[in-house]
Image 1 (tube, rainbow, N blue to C red):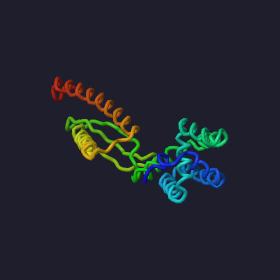
Image 2: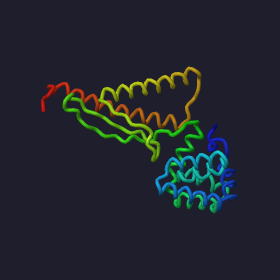
Image 3: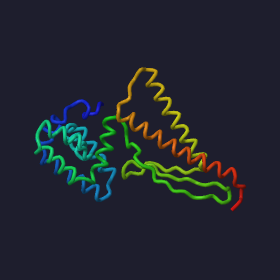
Length: 217
């Protein structure tokens, strides 16, 4: 399903929200309680249900919670200062709900489930094997998805698979004469620059290890 943000004017979404503002705020209070209590899976399911049954209102809340000046500016231009200020106040009041709403928005817009947002990483050293160990937990917001543990070369093999898959997807898009939206392309360029920086650091570490005899403490 296309992102409602791209297919409808913000004013139409906000008018739907304003027509049921009191009930929506009551729901947001309940959702915030779930967030405070740490019931993250239940919280996400409730937001998904909200998105399914009240799509326009869901998108209004989700966009407001991003605290986007562009969104607020569009609302103010179409509906006036009052509705825009109402949404700004919504963003201030329910800051705790910004991340789970954004995650569900990604799910709904891109037909995904529990997108990975962060990795919690720890490092150790296996002295008997002379091998560093990397362990990480993939997380979607406050929810743990899966754990992984491996040596640096194993972790890099996984990264290599993912980069190859990324190139395959871009090659397919180009071969079919498809475009990539501006936000995605901008983020892709930024990720590529960060990856190059990390690869440069990796090369330096590998060069240093080549000069260091095995077992030399």
